[in-house]
Length: 375
Image (cartoon, rainbow, N blue to C red; front, side):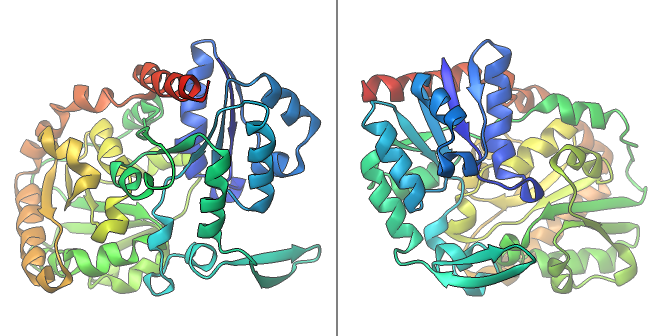
């Protein structure tokens, strides 16, 4: 199979393109498929190299970008009979500026920054709103792929939707895991979380903030590792000397950061968060780290298989009740850490079932279905 997978992340913000592009593409290459992985600039410029690859491609995947120039490319290749899939991995239509997500500037306000040499830039409002551009592009694509069943529900009105989970390149985590210093019940434990400001509401409305605060008052041998965006830090009602901040790292360094954690928390709230993929549970289970998470569709597969502890999501008005549950479950893990560590280790085989090399066939079948339907 000849596959063109177009990446939309810049090298400085490489995350979605890693999970949605690099990981599956590398797995495809291992089993003999031909994969071309250009950045989106090549797609916009329609370079000779990209055109040569697209001409022999069996399928073209473009990550999320369906602005006017991209729509023109989709139209060009559709007219030549090429199946084109747009990969969406976020609930763009639910973004609001007040939620703190920086992507809302584009997806809600329809504003892009026009940049010039010398660091000069200015904001420009698009003539056609980005969500409308996605709608217009639907005419020229074969459908959407996404790592969330909720996203598939939300976009099926526009085009066929194909569920392709985020699968994990587990060998990278297992290599880091070798250096993990394992602790036992009674040792000083580090509760960890990593992410961006897009999780602002995840903290504000899940109940975890008050829950953590109570835990830290009752258990002195606990610290919190905040990895990623330090603008989350002011929300934490924790003693400053017991919060460790870890700035963003490149994707290849992230498993090393996880070795500093003993317990992982994964708070979520509302349909926007329900549209995420289950990466945090996947990573934690591979690493053998006990997890307390929000019970919601994001983690349904893991809940169904008894992996992790959960505080079910609900309306903002029930935050106080959820805070009590976060407190109870975290205290239980802390006070019986050795048991929960062994419990998570027992789920390793299930976690490994999400390894990308084990799931190449699944993705192949989805691509073949798309190709056959297009033919």
